[in-house]
Length: 213
Image (cartoon, rainbow, N blue to C red; front, side):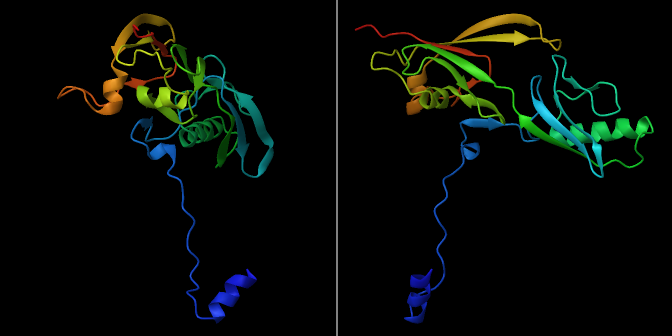
């Protein structure tokens, strides 16, 4: 700090230069975020607070059906809602049941449930890769890169993705496998009209075979 003032006295420019800021991954086009914010999932842990009512503060986990029990209320389903929507829903229940006249409810997510994909075969880091909490999907190129990349014998142009589909009740209804040319995706050499990205969603399984030597 003393050196900074000394330079100013000697006539050097005194405007502090901003430090370079690394671009956040959320601005990366290969990462898909929900524009309306993170949606609460079963397994998330949250703290529910009512302003001015310290006895109403509770720490709860969303159950298998996405419900929680705020103070003085029966179970309220919050899965699929963002924090603002969940706060509004609990406020509405407090008013409906005549517990608080004008409650101001705040919700803090204290622990996110892990959303992951599983990689096997010719990748440097086999096993699960955990998505950042607010990410809905990532391109397959980005997932493999963040997981350590391919091995030297990977068959990059024929990667298999297995995806299970579920109904609204959470029951598995179908499983599909996709063949993806990750090499062409990463180099931008796909045929005209082809999608520029293949999105990977939590729960997907990525299997990378070895190329023929």
